[in-house]
Image (cartoon, rainbow, N blue to C red; front, side, top):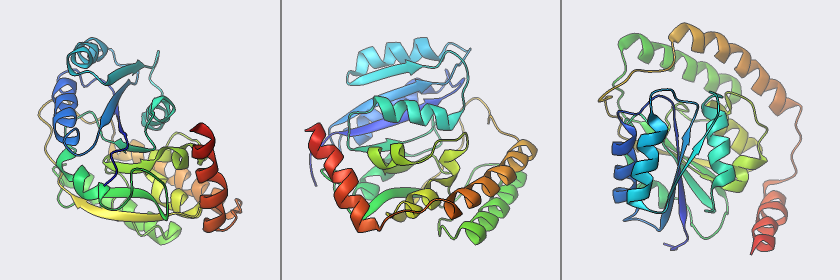
Length: 254
């Protein structure tokens, strides 16, 4: 396995009670797998998260905190983190402590940290979930509908634990719900997507920022938009993109 640096991007909103634990766990566990940097993106929190994250970052080292002046959403926070990241590959994980970073080692086995080849995205798929029954049902329904219409072959796009090429992410069109459609869009760009089973843990504090009704309403229009986008976007062959775009960009960057 290459010793190239791995970036870890943690988007967080009002998770002051959990962010130190998440940052330290990521540092201790992922740091044993590859050289890393951690970027926490505070998406306009008003619970003091930034102060906790800054203090923890100073203690850990190789860690930065970027703060949005107002809440912009998870996809915007991920994009901010990607723009700040210096690694060729980026791990994304949620700030609520439910993602288990111990599975990153298994996800890294699917790629080479030193380069981008056939695989552009490795998705964590939760083996079991600790959400309420209604959220589990809503998620299963949404996943089944999305997989049928987009043919993305990913059973759990909502899992926050992902490993993605930084440049592949930044080559995608940006919109508010981008993070829920990464498998379909990365595949449409010409890259393979790999699914890896991961553990899901219960929350120790705080509460979910999404409701079933709100997510379903927005999700319907987002899904229609992604279908339109993929049908109206024509991409050269995957081999051309890999050799002419991604490789050249990194070569020019040194």
